[in-house]
Each structure stands twice: as structure tokens, then as C-alpha cells.
Image (cartoon, rainbow, N blue to C red; front, side, top):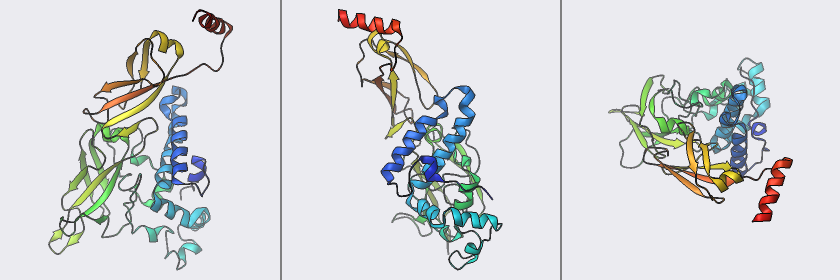
Length: 324
């Protein structure tokens, strides 16, 4: 059995943390450990740390997943593991035998990071796809990563009114990089069938993807399954529609004299010119660099004052102050 993961400890919050506190902790930790912000020699280590942070937030930001995770707790999971998957607690009427989480897996999981977020396969896009969820996560929420596993014959939630009987909806949680690049993704449905879903590049939040005949059974045959796209929060970028926002720090001399900086995008860093006389908070617009080619990336420049100065730097700043 996989080793228990303390998601609260990973995010550095207590078990009574509010949704806002959890979101704030995630953003802080994600920025601190994002692999792109560390030298090459540390990237492998930071990648694993970042995966844990992302996984912890996926669970704790979702009310149903968090309830399930809290309900059994560390002791219940360890009892289950020591018993080879059949602990005394798990065998009791409270847990209904076998997996202590099994009684909860009839539900569809919505909210942040839910739905199909961990489907099997590889999209070839992004460093942190749903397949990166740990064995511990999958032992609780099923091999689908986002909670689509273990539902039984019927799954998902009834589709919106006006759609046929048997039609169901489920959430497809994507990393921002996967939504941006699109591509073919394989997933395994609860009935064991593996299907390929084609995601258009730049697929937006709330977009519905129809899988014909993949819904619940009816007398007239299977209904359709509608996947509703949910895009996970990103450590660097803030999403607004199809536009992205990112803060970038520059030094005072770059702001005063102008220069070239590197700005992160979903396709990798690009060179951007900073005009001379740039003020703190100035925004630069990079057209076509948003979630899709129709969106833009808005770069907010923050001027950072050095915490420590060499003697030469101090002398120069002193001279600048005297002549200003």
C-alpha cells in the first residue's frame, strides 16, 4: 500500500483551515517550489515537491474530496494498509468492507481539481498532468485521479434539462498547460473502456466536450457523457477568460534605463523590451500569448529594490540622490 500523505502538512495549514487560507497557502508554496524558478540542478527535486503541493490542493480545495480524506484519516488508512487492504475498521459496518474509502466512491466529485483530472494516458503537454497523482491519491479516489473511478454502473451527475435521459455530466480538470496546448488524451471510463478525447488548443473554462454513447444506460441505449472543462489554478499565471496575467520583477536600473527581460509564458520564456522610465505596476500586453491564440498575456512589472548594496552600488545611489 502507498504511504499516507498529510496534505495539510504539505501546504503548511492546520486541519481547520478555511478555503481562503488553503488557496493562499497553495499559491505561496507553488511559487516557492515551482521548478521553473530553480536552477537545473534542483529541478528534479522541485518537480516532486511541486507535484505534492498540487495534489494536496486538488484534495483540500474540493469539499467532497476533503470530507472523504478527513473522514477516515491517517489511522484508518494505516490500519487498512497494515491489514493488506482489509483492516478491522474497514471490515466493520461503518466502512462496508475492503477499502475504507469505498463507500464514498459512489459520488461524483466536483469543485477545484475534480472530475476526470487524473485520467490515464499522456497528452504530451505540460509537466504536471493528471497521471502525476500519487499512488496514495489513486488508492482513495480511484485510478482516474480526479474521482471518476469506483462509481459502478452509473456515474456523473444528471445533465442539464433539455438533454436526453441517460445523459450525464462530469468535470474534466486540466492543468493550464494542457488546456493551452490541447491534443489527444486517453482516459478510462468506470466501465473499463478506454477512450480518446481530442482537446482543442486553448480550450476554455466551462467548455463542454461530448462523448456520444458514454453516458448511463437507458432502455433505448446509452446516453451521452458531457465533460465540462475546469482549469486548475496555476502557480504563476492568473486566468481571466482567455487572458493570462503574470507579475514580473525588474530592478530599478532596468526601470530607469530600459532593457530586455525574460517573461514566462505557457510556451516557455520570451524576451520582452522594457521601455525607459517604466513605473512600478506598469502593464505590458503580449497579444496571442494567453490561454488561446485569441487571448493576451498581461505582464505587471514590479520594481524590486536590492536588500543589500555593495559599496560601489551605495556610492552610485548616493550620487544619484545628490544630483536628482
